[in-house]
Amino acid sequence: RRTAQHTDVFCEKLDRATSGHFHMSTDAFGAYPNAVSYHLGMRTDYGTITKKYGHEEPERRYSPPSIIGIEKTAIHGNPTFSQTCTSHVESHNLTMRMQIRRLTRLTNAFSKKWENLQAALALYFAHYNFCRPHGSLSGCTPAMAAGVTDTRWSLADLLGSPTGEVS
Image 1 (cartoon, one colour):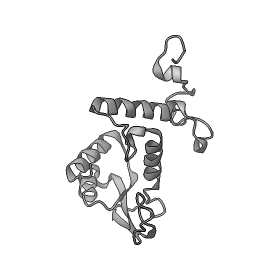
Image 2: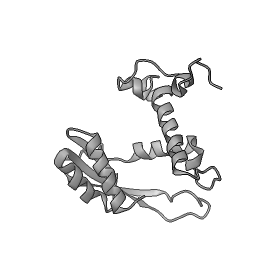
Image 3: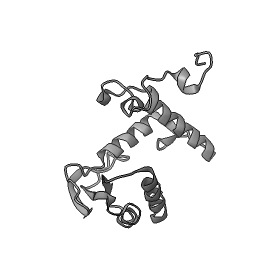
């Protein structure tokens, strides 16, 4: 959720999961600057990006209006404005919504239990990182590019099938 409390928890987890100095970009949600500064300190070159939208168009009911401007702001450190963007995250969110039906708006494919949603997301991320080759990585998987594995996993590998068959 987009609350100050959830933003604080997210930045705390990000602090534990990372090391060293890195570039960070977010949208201009007001809770980010304090949470990033508190948990990540000066380990980041941190900038925000604010999109300015035009007038809403009635025929585009479920889509945001057209973007008419972008403002990039340095929060702390020395962010490189050419790297300050949120498009990578937005693209990945779109990929997730397209491949995980329970994340799609206006659908009846939802998880009644939190554990079911967690299992669906874990399966998606495992497949995305270990089984699915990516064109931007010359046909290898993200796990192969990161050196976690040297082979592309099959669905049988992913599901741990002892016979190598997927039913």
